[in-house]
Image (cartoon, rainbow, N blue to C red; front, side, top):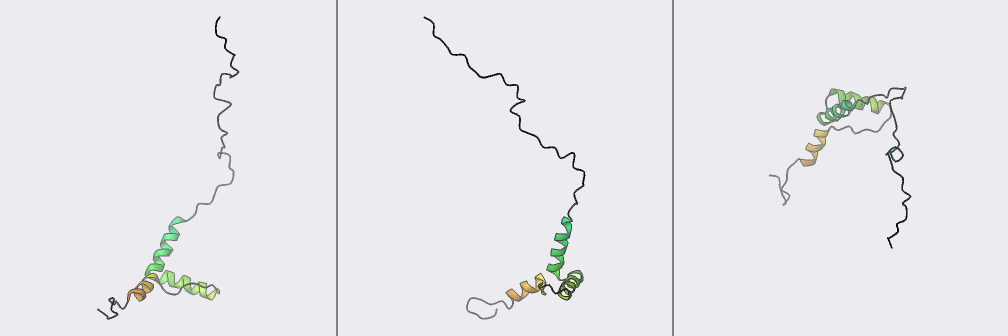
Length: 92
């Protein structure tokens, strides 16, 4: 008596049916606009220094009715840490 085996129903798979669906972006007809990533850094640096370019942007925003901070980054930092006091509250 030989052991009987049931025939497997698994088919040989060549990989084509289980491959993930690929999306091609090669056919996009409209070119995407490239963001100006450097502008964010230069505007932030202008704010930190409080230079003329930042001041002109603040004046234009205030004239347009927008609420924007009027102190530069260094001004805010120096106001926060000045005058320097120790824990007893006396200036040192």
